[in-house]
Length: 215
Ligand code: TMP
Image 1: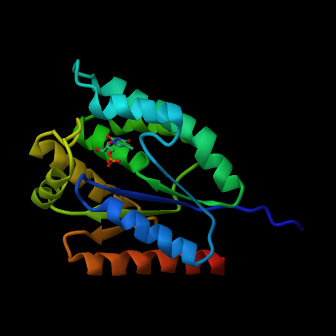
Image 2: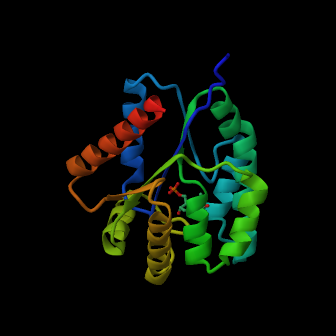
Image 3: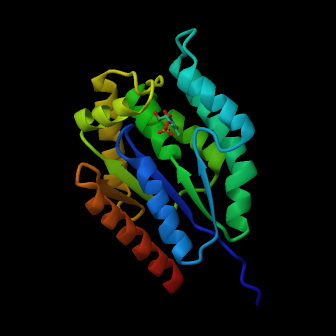
């Protein structure tokens, strides 16, 4: 019988300044060393249209964007991303490595903006059907450290400019998601020295690869 290829879907999450970007290349490297064909992408964005929406979502400041409009725009970009990039890659047997996905919506639009879980779950179901990440690495860091790191980078976007209470709510919601999904979501303490963080990331990814190969 012909084996139908099925890729795996890995997402990376965390508050701004938690060190996701540095570690995406560590994850990518670990996958490539194992000979796994990967497609790397990000949200919001991941397609030309989605990247145009990303710019509006992150940086449009001419009006106060109502949280529901923000939520719908994020899911609009996600629908296109799944259709154009994620689903085709997974069904071709490739692994998808994505910088943020729907956990970020629960954390930022749910925790941060106060949108109900039910509203997010409704759109999640409509846009994703059964699609869920197979592995999520959540980079967790306290708010002060995250702010200090994010400030070193560039001008702050609409989320980075939010108050400490918003950022705390994002972090709390992420940690709740991790507690509720311990099989899928692995929390990495990103306040540790970088070499230790990198070691943990490699070890989580390699454990996951071994598990998949053993299935
Ligand atoms: P980043 O990719 O540089 O981390 O920036 C993306 C920003 O978008 C980040 O501040 C979190 C935010 N975001 C949401 O608010 N909801 C979402 O669903 C996603 C994917 C990102």
